[in-house]
Length: 156
Image 1 (tube, rainbow, N blue to C red):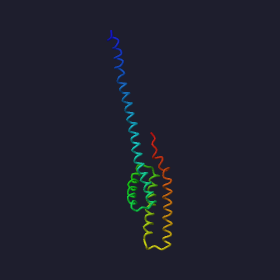
Image 2: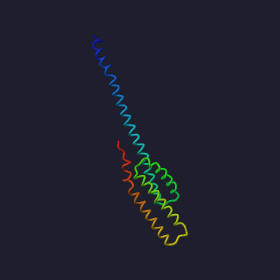
Image 3: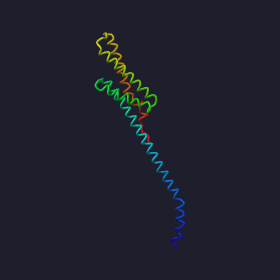
Image 4: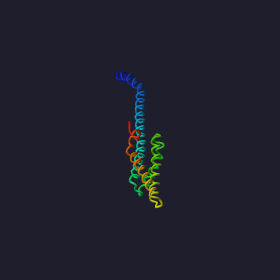
């Protein structure tokens, strides 16, 4: 008697078992997909924040004007911004290039000022140019966060 009533249940369970297993497999696969997607976002964030920090560190170093750390920061900046071309849109690439050019110009004026072969008028012009570049770097540092915010928001 027990075997007669259990047979329809076993038949029914045998019929739906593959569907249940397939549903569980789909749920697991979708969870893995979401996990991998979030992991990719986190890795992208890590690479982008590293570039952001490198740029802000470099600008800060140039504003302080410590030659002992300047070359080290310049090297970090150049390495980091090389990756920026793949991780950001055109606006950040343009910003990085502008910073590179302006800091090269500032360094050039600084070296020229150290030369003893410049006239008083050239010295005044040089100092004015350095002041303008310094102001540009300060302004860029103050306004850099809004430029990066769309790239550094984690939306899960």
